[in-house]
Amino acid sequence: MDRAQKEQVVDELGQIFASSGVVVVAHYAGMTVAQMQTLRAKMREVNGSLRVAKNKLAMIALEGKPGHKMGKLLSGMTVMAFSEDPVAAAKVCEAYAKTNDKFVILGGAMGDAVLDQAGVKAVAAMPSREEVIASIVACLGAPASSIAGAIGAPATAIASILSTIEERLAA
Image 1 (cartoon, rainbow, N blue to C red):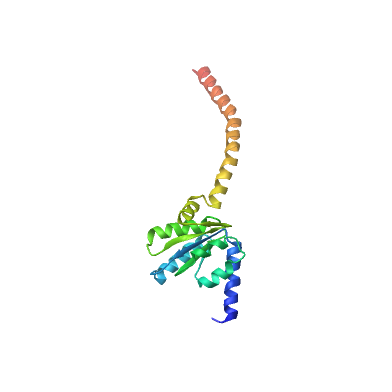
Image 2 (cartoon, rainbow, N blue to C red):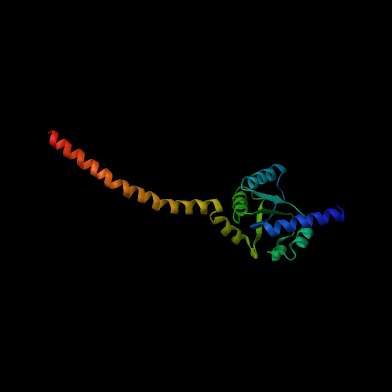
């Protein structure tokens, strides 16, 4: 890899570190190509991505970026998973690590905060952006359905009273 290619990789990694909601660093030694492709596919499903890069280049790209202290995690055969959604990459990595013992989460970064293994696990347990939006919509929609039920209740009560009166008159 020549100098221009290295500079391009550093620029790409710098953009990834600056724009990602979360970056998860893991060891992947011993994983097959098929296993890596499976992990990449799972990351794509949540609009995330997976990147293998030389640790030295990643450390250079981290300089001056949020989570620059994450550089101490970059040793050995590391892979970086990232996503704009602050919890998506962590959820996928945590779930995949449970099924593949060769994929070992080292930690990561969320903004300026450096995460250890427990931190990544805690982030993975948080609800995703879509889940939070769904719960907010449900909270907003609940009063409206209650109001509609309350408005419709008197009409239903009147109709049942009228039908009862009609049945008594007919009898």
